Each structure stands twice: as C-alpha cells, then as structure tokens.
Image (cartoon, rainbow, N blue to C red; front, side, top):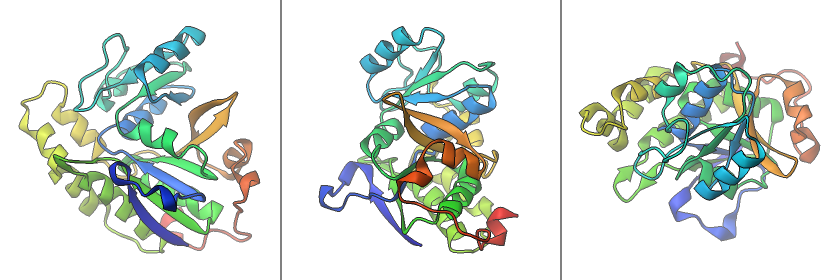
Length: 260
C-alpha cells in the first residue's frame, strides 16, 4: 500500500489523489467530531461556509452546530465552538451536528470525490488504520491541514506518521506522537493559557491516541457530505465505499498490531 502526503495550503492540482484520502485535523476539527459522536451525535454534516451551515440548519431544524473561524474563535450563533471539551460534556442524544471549520472541513469538501474519504485525528488513529487495511486501497493520501504561515502543522504530521506506521505493520509507541501534538506550534498556544478559546483541556483531549474505536468515514447521502462512525465491514458497504473500486482483503488484514 503506497502512502503520500499533501498539504492543504500548498496543493498541486495536477496530482489529485483519487483513491483513499485521510484529511487530518488534530487541533481540533476531527477530534471535536469524534467527541461529538461519543456524546450521542447521530451524524455530522461538514459544511465549508458559515452561510451554508445556517442554510442547512434551516432545512434540519433538529440539528446543532459546531465550528470556528481561523485562529480558533467560535462562530457567532453556533451552539458549540470547535472544542472537544465542550462536546465531551454535551448530550446530543441522536441529534445531527453541522460542522464548519477553517481547515479540516475545508479539506474534506476539497476531496469529497475520493473513492474513500476519512476524517483523521489521533483519537481515532488506530481505528482509521484498521479501516484502511480492510479496504486495501492502492494508495492512501494523508492531507495535512494544520500547516499555516505561523504554524508548523506537526500535530497533523504526527498523526499521519502514526497511521502510516500502523499501515506498514509496525507497532509504534502512541505516546511519541501524542507528545508531538502537545509540543507543536499550535499546541503550545493551548498550553500558554493566553487565549480563552484555546483551553489547555482541549489540547489534552486531542493528544489521547486511540481513545475511540471508530473511524470517521465521509460519504454522500442525499447530495450532502456527511461523517459517520465506521467500525466494521458492513459500515463501509452501507456507504458505498466498497462499490467504488476498493476491495476487502479475503483473509484478515495482515497486521496484528492494528487489529488486535
């Protein structure tokens, strides 16, 4: 299985990935999404503009909203900011969630036509690797969303390194990658305590490898992009991923450290 990396803010349109894509946003979009599912969200609708999110909410009045603008400030009028600690204590009770963020959601919508599309973060790292090993794509492309002019993006690169190692059959120490999340440029801003919308507790929740046993699988339903939890082959089949040119291995995944 080949792997490669792309950086969202310096894409080469001539080399678009078409097989399996993992859009990674550790701090904080897809960590927040994982905690939202743990809090009971039924599905998550990623929408790349604030106006689009409000339009969708008018169509889905039962849905709640979560998101932030660049830099981490919450979006006015949304129910939640882009904060896993806020979602950790919430009770979404089967309600859908609309998510808008400046990096992760933009990356998902950018690659919405990939044959298999996942939202990646460290808290679902091993589950994401397991899902990819079940699909056995020819290539997995990791999209790094956290690199900006003032950010090194190493939190997302660390997540890509971790999932990549698992895909190659290694058994890496997850704490090494968690330490990189805490010590990256953006992670240190959470530790500084100088920005009220970048709480230290969010950083700790983001730096917990494999906290959840599900991957975040994106699919098209009724013309909308949506994220759902994926734990098993039937989840992948139900979203049509396996009908789009990817296939399962016949006998297991061949990687005991991941699937144990």
